[in-house]
Length: 152
Image 1: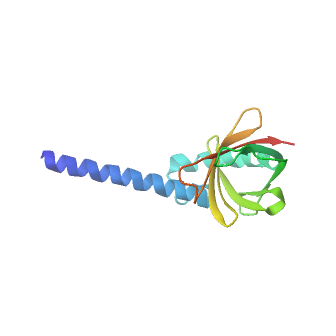
Image 2: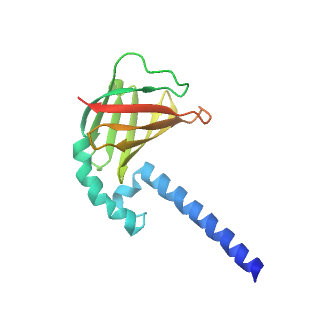
Image 3: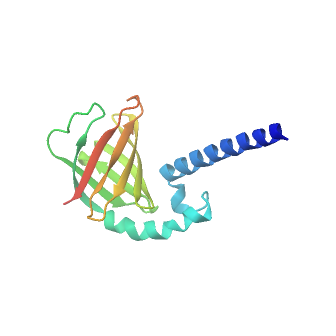
């Protein structure tokens, strides 16, 4: 009986990990917006994200650090727009970097490209209107960059 319980517990952990991976991929891929591939508890948050999305549209000044810890030099601009699909489209420095975002709770999850490399970001939507968070680039092993966005 103990062996059976141990085996079932291990399967439950694997299922939980797989579900978490699917939900994360879905959020980054825009599935959370449709509600078709996520549990009802997450789909109900879409109503809130639909209300928040228009408030994020606009231009932002960006400060931050690269994954090597060095501060960004010069001024950087981020433009956020609402795509016909309902996703948020992000464009840094006039198209040099692009991404797509989805709101989950008080977090903006972003998937994008930078110099041909995949990038993911998790940005907290702060009550003062700024967004702050970290980002990872596929080839930067374990190092995180940071960004703070202030609406212009």
